[in-house]
Image (cartoon, rainbow, N blue to C red; front, top):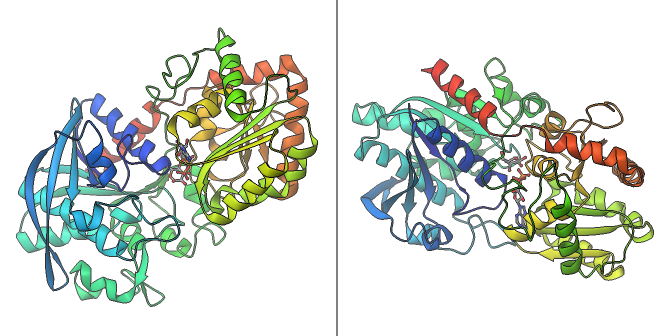
Length: 480
Ligand code: ADP
Ligand code: GLC
């Protein structure tokens, strides 16, 4: 099949979270399966500066209609592996910036224009380069207009650009919600500018377009597919998702085993496998050294790596700060994002500098060291569409402590409920729930044979992309 993906992040060129990992490894797996795969990505500065992209050839010039203006841009293309082409939709004004979405304090004011331009650039390339896509598969709000824009361009030009469109919701909390006036920038027919189209409480909601108008809608775990049909998790779009109740499916993301595998991970100071965990001890020692924990401490190391956003439940972790100060243990947190969490975590690490270490940045290498060197990995998420780190932890022999929500339910088995098969600790997403989970972890840590069995079970699970990629392949086939 000819499969076109469009997304606002793609590992290793631009990444702020799991979207980049998920799209990259899905596209890569489909390419390995012999499909002709193209991935569209905005031509961000970080992507253009990536060594692999430096030689990307200019494919075509764009002239994009945005409301009553025309904006120019260009498209560059390169091929990072067999059967895979990456297209960068470039326009300096929009994408030559330090971050993909905002300054860190707040979102860029022209995000609507930036991503509408990106979507239109994809559609123009489909047409001008005659890509003849069987499937256009788009991800999250930044690309949610594509199903509509593809069909609109087909009508205007009397051509077929894509046989089917698929839209994947990675996170319904981010919707691309803009003032109503933004609708004019889409140049879509006015009859989509109402409640049956993109209008949402007097605003324009781009995500809604993807959910309503893609031929197929998917999300990143079966559990999340159900959750987002409820008011508790639907972020105001539960009713809209319910209109797709018969055909929305959830495939759990896989793990790119070329990147996340303790036996081959070049970012670690030592490698290890289930048969020989000595390397894990070396990683733990190195992590402790980098965090200034010394070498003579007792108790487990708890690791956290995440975006500092409400979703990740840092509130619940912080509400248990007493645990980390009084118990025999260490805590290392890596992440970046909202200032309120940075401040609160800084305060905690200042209170117990020899026990709590905080690093506020994006650091791919450190994230691997934390996965490998920690004894437990904590994810107290309030909601979690899929979550990747709980899978990485299991593969790295690090026991995940997770909230009982979304994809975490689909990927972790609780050790007390299923003593024979358990791989992690599941908690209610409350202060008490997480507190209890942390205490259960101390108990497990004290029982070394049981801990080793839990680690082994996690390490032997198959989290590869095979199952998910086959799910998507079936879905593409069926829709065609
Ligand atoms: P989300 O996509 O909601 O952020 P996921 O668990 O799906 O959550 O994926 C997060 C990804 O981003 C993981 O690969 C994680 O290691 C990575 N990540 C998050 N914060 C950082 C950071 N500060 N440095 C390096 N990697 C990070
Ligand atoms: C989103 C979700 C996360 C998921 C990732 C990749 O960022 O928050 O749970 O793992 O997308 O699908």
